[in-house]
Length: 263
Image (cartoon, rainbow, N blue to C red):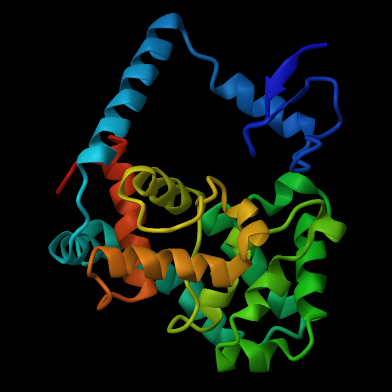
């Protein structure tokens, strides 16, 4: 028996466990991920240098309205928006309600695939089905989504008893595409970059989780909105929408990590 790091939540578990005792990720998925990321000593050194570089760039980074506008309206952001318009906005417009199983199933499947929300990891055979029936069971879900009731995000995310894990990131995306003007998207990369930035800028009083799945423990969607609002207020960029901020931070994360070139 050996201890390995869960590739989903980052905590140590036994390699003989059926699943991660902390987040519920199946051991088969964790071992497959470890196989993919095995590195040679040279690559490990390069990875360490890259991580050091990211930490230094975060310290030097000063978010601004000018940069936010440049990135959120740039070619990559527009490419992402066009992709979402073609694959998701059109789908959610075609099936605007969340009470018919077959219509919700189509939306959940496409959203899971486009955004890699990993629903299938926790139950490869029935994960999608579990989430679909859960969404359809939520009281007055359509009225709440159209009316901008943000508490519905936490209810969509609350699948731990049924799936073994809360699907908070997925829930924010499902709500966003149901009503883009109201609901803020959340994902791992945005959580990470805000957490790292907050360590030296201290724009938010509490600790920001490293994973979107941890947000239900710190206030859920209301807590997430408070984090984003604190970021916007601290750097005087309140004029930007939640979507523009999401695009800005998602692309900036990739830029600082060298995944894409600065443009």
